[in-house]
Length: 172
Image 1: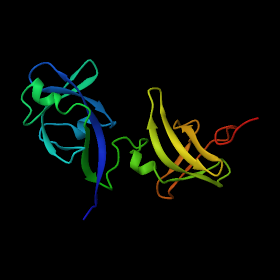
Image 2: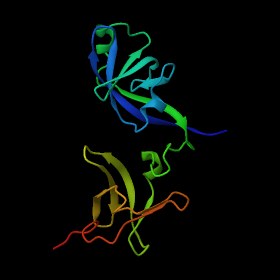
Image 3: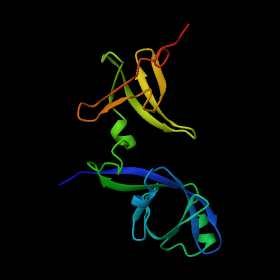
Image 4: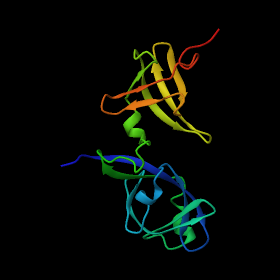
């Protein structure tokens, strides 16, 4: 039996209109896979909810949740983290994409293949994702783009960095 892991998929945003719709600040690259009628989501408090309806408006996901029929009811959820449980073996739809949980803990290799750190966290910034890498010299942020991280080997548990000065070390 495949183990289940809990993943953060969003944060409840502002109420939209008067019929209980709420915007979701997404924390997933695949919202259609996480938010659909009948999907079960869990609040940070542990309370489980069911998605009744989803719509997109101006690039923003709007969700209606069972038991929250109006604006007043749904406003009580503002700011709550939303999680769901997924199979640990689940992989993204696109073969060149990775879930955060797949990257965290990977051994970081320099361009020569020597160990230089470990991925601690994936930070989702407006312009690009960053890998927080723990090195002997301290934590460093590496843009997670193909030009700087050309090789991700999930089977080996490693990712390899390009030969770029200053990526993990300070330049005088």
